[in-house]
Length: 392
Image 1 (cartoon, one colour):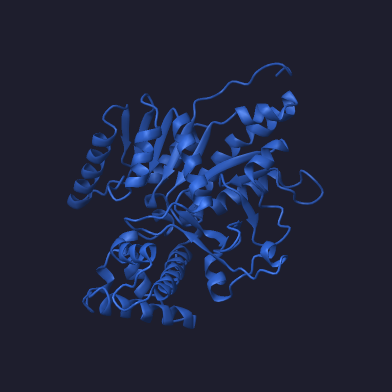
Image 2 (cartoon, rainbow, N blue to C red):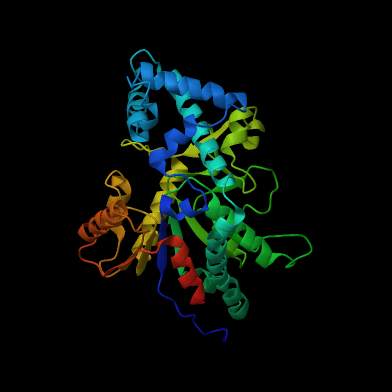
């Protein structure tokens, strides 16, 4: 390519991931998450304490039957808690401060349950996620090649073929992307110095000081590197946020929420100025009163809207488009191009209930995207990734 030759702008695809993306790798079904929480073992001791507190709250405060606490919907737990916290009032005799503590305990339990669910699944079951990550990194790395050939960082910025919007908390894809980036860029310099990064499309710092693997995407593009945009609009298990300065900290080697709950980390930036502010989890919990006023989360949502607006093709993977996700549904309604193609990847079980559920989900998409070209794939994420990688 000549230096003054403009790179072709490809059609842009936005992949939207729901819980179904992670289920083949061991990810839990959200509807069964409370059941998994109460089936956790009692080690470490914090798990036992948090389970007892949660069960007591459900029975005594929310008046759930002791025999059916596993069946309470997470939305029905978080909605009254968040309403009371927003208004600064107690929930029966539970003070706002106690509600905030309970909320932190639930976040810890949810993270532990998701973590153990993935750990109980063999590595081979996660291969499709590895293949998907390799495909995405291969496409994204073309940005760096353009920058080298044209001697222009702008060429890399102009090449923007895809992004991923995830509604999941788990870090299955995050880790796979990070590992593929490390493999591709290892040996580029004397020490491992990442040339490509996972870009959460917000301002990030590393949990460990001087961890060069965690860099903002815009900084990387300016340095003629490349990014893989992963917009996690409901937060992530490897995110921590300072309660004072609101900086967002990222770690790829661990689910940061778990160790931070046991041994809270002090924000190293605030500590320089004598402020001992602790880091906390950054998950947007399932509630009908989602608080999206957080600066970093709001930035992710704003960037997600831009990605949807630029997309010529949307691919939903393992997402049922529930009515409860009305914030995301309105974002789709507001930002999606009228001529954008919509492809839906779901998994249809060959049972009466499975076929009925699949038809209901398809009808939900047909009603919402009535003016778009709409196609369906019933084979699930594993089959979809095989087809996608075969096209490379």
